[in-house]
Each structure stands twice: as structure tokens, then as C-alpha cells.
Image 1 (cartoon, rainbow, N blue to C red):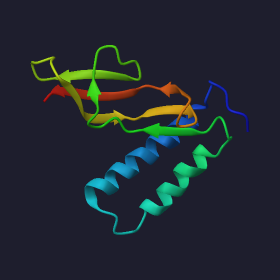
Image 2: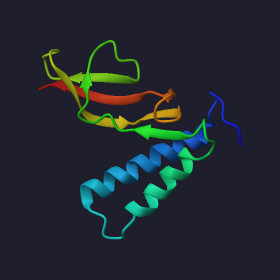
Image 3: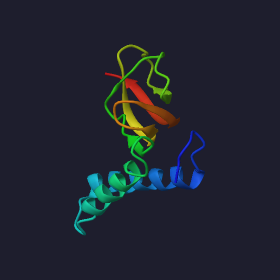
Image 4: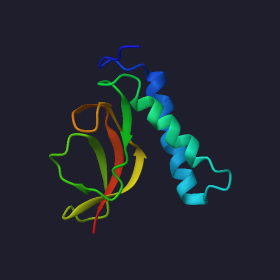
Length: 114
């Protein structure tokens, strides 16, 4: 299956759900040992094609500047200085490899001053 910039919404939806599962495991623990399965699913998406794999990036804790184009941010609080991502509603989804890639879904985040 050759991927282009027109990634099917169903694949984006699956990656968003996979991200949600990963976050729930981080919050509530992995009593069913699901993290291994999630890691395998993430690897399968990256291997869809050697140059066109899909993967997501969790921007939690990263600095935010107005010039950043890979996320849409809502500012929490009153200050706009020294902003960092404090909540991720949707991850950044990219196509390509880890070194050279393009954003196919902007992350949706909440940022606040530290």
C-alpha cells in the first residue's frame, strides 16, 4: 500500500486511539500487559512502507512558541511567556521516517507558562 499525503482518516483515527490507549496505560498502569501490544502496533504503522511509515509524536512537556506549526495550541492562564505543553488532546501524526517526515495531523494541545 503506497501512502501519499492523503492518508485515510481511518488510519489517523486508529493512531489517535492507539495514542489514547498508551496514555491510559501510563495513567492507570498496565495490569494486562498491553504496552507490548501497543509497541508492536506502532511499529507496524511505521513499517507500512520503508519511506512512508506513519507515526505519532507526543509533544507533552515540549516548549511552545507562536512560530511552531505542528500544533494548534490553547493558552491556559494569563501569561504568554515561557510556554510549555501541559495537555495533549491529539498527538502530532507524521508520515515518513523519524529523520525526514511531514505532518499529516497537527497536534491539539494546551500550553501554559512555567
